[in-house]
Length: 230
Image 1 (tube, rainbow, N blue to C red):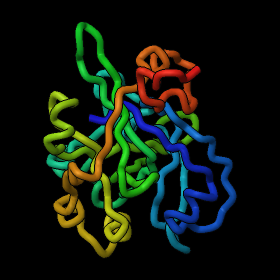
Image 2: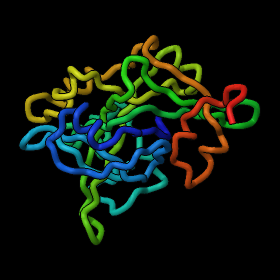
Image 3: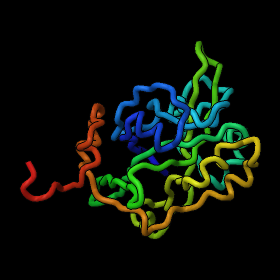
Image 4: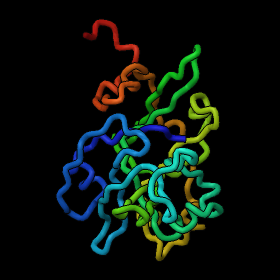
């Protein structure tokens, strides 16, 4: 599972890196994104890839708000087409979730120590996602979920279920987004664990992440701090 992640790229960086339709956005840098937060997602639009905002917790069309009984901010790739809530968006509403890193919480000495994961090959990357629209409430709500896959030996040391975000390589972005030309079966079958040798990980400050208002660079800095750092 991926319980939190970061998206610390500006709108200009996101627009250029993902080659998006040039519509102005004021994207804040986010270092500690939690489930039910509003996050940017990338979808296929009429003029190219476009950005939209969505609640990070999929809300099925038959619901009007996130249901805490069913944690739907992550979705297992292996069962996407078997679950009612995910099958339709897997076929018709696939998206990319821009990221700069993600967190895992590992039990150690009676606490859950957070670790931050990022890539050596790129400071920004994209995870596979699904989006949906619920019109059950007073206003339509766009929501999304992040797809996960089996991890690798490195991930297995930090995640008890050995799960990680389904990172999509750049050459596969269009295939994942194009729900008309690429079937859900084919798109999902191409999702796979990211190579262990390209992932870097370090511990971060647990107390910093516990603060409900903490969403700055301190959330992803190595912990304990280097000797001599103020």
